[in-house]
Amino acid sequence: MSSALETLGIPCWHSFHLLTTHFGDNEMWQDAIDRKFFNKGEPFGREQFDQLLHCFGAVSSDTPAIAFADDLIAAYPEAKVVLVERDIDKWYESYMHAIIGNMFNPFATLVYHLDRAYIHPIGKVQKSVVAGWAGITSRRDAELKARDKYRQHYAMVRELTPPERLLEFKLEEGWDPLCKFLGKEVPKSKFPRLNEKGWFDEKASLLLTEGLRKGLVKVVPWAVAMAGMLLAWFKYFG
Image (cartoon, rainbow, N blue to C red):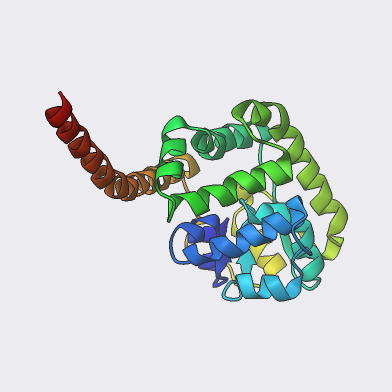
């Protein structure tokens, strides 16, 4: 969906920006999460969201932004909302693989603790928003709660959004209803349909590999130094 909006000339926020061009925004997102879900201050309003999203014209509903859908609808009463309808079982399979599978993967957890400068703040945002918003702190939690949270979220968006501002949209409908709703010309190109699973696998692999490399750069010298000290100790006292 974000690719479609970009094609229409609407810069769209996506969580992948937090891994790349807007890595520095993780700190502010963490503040927003802490305020809303963990009682660490007043929740964000339009002023804070303007600062966080100032260079975007749309927001994709992935984490952490999805947890602030109600706040964003209230903060931007002039905004239009596109609610993308998906088969819940296909969504669940994708969510469990892409988000939960990586979040609670032992290798990802190792990298999360090794790379405190890069992977840790990214992982903390994702872990804390899923815990605060959906009550998910383990894979088992996700298995029990994810589908219900999906249904609750869609019901909330429908309840909070005035009908004239809401488009319930299926990706297979293509450009026509979306462009009519947004007041945009229909592009000549085909409606973008990315392989979400493949795309996320590629990005997650690159992310974890880079995080592991950075973590090892810090850990290996320490480990070598410790090994040297132990060797010297054994030579002296052995």
